[in-house]
Image (cartoon, rainbow, N blue to C red; front, side, top):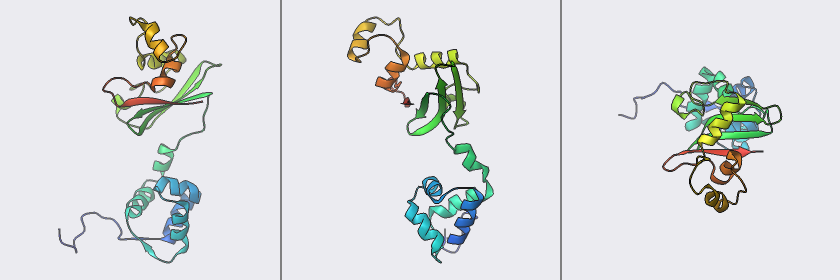
Length: 184
């Protein structure tokens, strides 16, 4: 492709005032916008207060967010609603966020992918507490496994408890890129 032809309908650059206007429209602080853009807060400050034209990946992000401002809300991590939060991951991608309130025996999920096979509960949008427990067990070795006590001993776990097993193994299975991070 020649240098004069463009392959994509993107502006060549954005200005700091355009970035600041977009950030305000999205109701994001400089720190929140810097996290979203994958740059430092100092970089966002420099962009907004310099008169220079800014190029690079921020131009694509600017176009994407200008045309789709609801995208920010669709990827935002909500406040925790239970005493335990599980991050169901595929490699480094968040697939499903699971908040569990053990006392109330409630669970709330939020999916961050449209790929059903990557979601913790597939098409199910509102699993109940028992279904969450079943899901956790599915990420562990079966409770009926031969030599279960030896495995539990090796993990330094006193009894079969899926949450304790996942804390030790991250719910990783052989040749599987899915895993679980627990936040208490």
